[in-house]
Length: 354
Image (tube, rainbow, N blue to C red):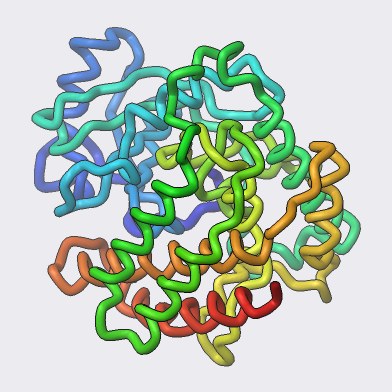
């Protein structure tokens, strides 16, 4: 994560007041010295890494050591979407697979240490591509290659046998899609109440739900800016596993389509985050075909999955916007609610492609 902009300069562990929001360095250092003796040598520093709209990610440093700490957002009760133990478990299980993940080092479920459960992982050198200015540096050939490798890694994940890596009981694949639709449409009715047409969209998604095509380990938020890319264009780590489970793999592919195609929001945050065909990125139809070739399955009903993905993204934005209004987010979230209406509109348009 070496290119990821920090929202604050490194802070030392010399006093509680110097700790970044959400991370008491003095308490953390004391805990690590007790539970993982020898890990930290020297003054412990931390940077809050930008880019995430939910869980907080910190780069820790001490001497030559570098690690990553992940914890849930401030001011929100623990939930499935902020489950650090879940993330820690799935990354550890995938360590021996063909899916590149950071090496996990320690999990703390005691919220009294820093105010929430957290886990530590090894620092992986690489770049998170989030903006057009960054992706333009790839060049057309590497942009094309990274795009197809992104799909290849997703196909590899969906090809992992959960039983073989100790994740056989990681989720409840039976009825997964029905539960997902009930959960997210229910949240939409709550969080997005007041937005035009939400009730109709929710009903269309509920009644149009396709038959699930199977079960696999799903990431839950798979996209270009949730992977680290090495200097030679290889994907060296997939990040942000807190929403992983066993379920319908097309929920991952449909959500990737949302991030790839973005939303129609001229002059605003279109969510594509640097993915531009003019820079060498292929159209999503090519990626869908690549996925079908790699997995041997035809992603039938993908438009519904993408429409459902847009609704989920609108709900997530709505929840973050609510936290912002309550004063429970770091700076930089002032406009997070601006994209909710365009996301809902895009969900409706995507359903109409069917």
